[in-house]
Amino acid sequence: MPDIAPPNAVRGVDAVPELIAGRRVAVLTGAGMSTDSGIPDYRGPDSPPRNPMTYQQFVGDPAFRQRYWARNHVGWRRMDAARPNPGHRALARLERAGVVTGVITQNVDLLHTKAGSRRVLDLHGTYARVRCLQCGDLVSRMSLADRLEAANPGFAEAAVTNGLEVAPDADAVVVDTDSFRMVDCAHCGGMLKPDIVYFGENVPKDRVADAYAMVDDAEVLLVAGSSLTVMSGLRFVRHASKTGRAVVIVNRGATRGDDLATLTLDAGCSPVLSALAERCATVPA
Image (cartoon, rainbow, N blue to C red; front, side, top):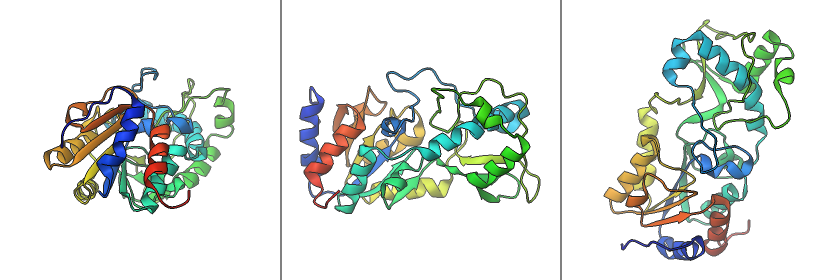
């Protein structure tokens, strides 16, 4: 399939239906997918510099772990309250219409599921669960919130200010975290960690295999809102290109996978996916 390099997003949107007509489409989404829901991304053109905590810092240093839990205690409810935007709803509509076969998301915000998408692979986990690194016990973030609130009464309320910023991993910007008290696993006393894949941590092998299978089951890979800076997402673009599948990338700004794409659109996800749903979906929204 020849490369298409439209000079603007409007012409690009018009070209997408021709690429996906009659083909099964797998979707890979990144943080740019959720910016219209009020969740900032990591590397967008207007994003401030971010230094996400690494897995090694979290497990190796109690001070890092304390800071993370203090900030997460404030930020996770903001993420829980976030609602799907038109881009999320458009993908759910395209799935109902039989165009999209599944979504692989690098986001932990559950917004695809909230929007009604049925086949969603949360590549990096979700904010809504917490895992014990010793015994493997899983608990809901809501139940842990009750324990953390009991150990830190009033902390969240005191930390909230107008314009509180929450990062894509539910980490809120809270300056004073020295007084925050952490809690351990209620079953074994082990270290608790959000069920999220941190930087420096590997995605579980079975989850990666399921994602490759989703790409292999499709004929087109549509990337929405990811700069593809990290290999976690880029590998699926490389795989799709290597196996002869068309790759369409919708993102504000350049991505690491642009040279592999059949079509790139420098645009926001919501308008492009909404237009695509209008053109391709045949079921009511």
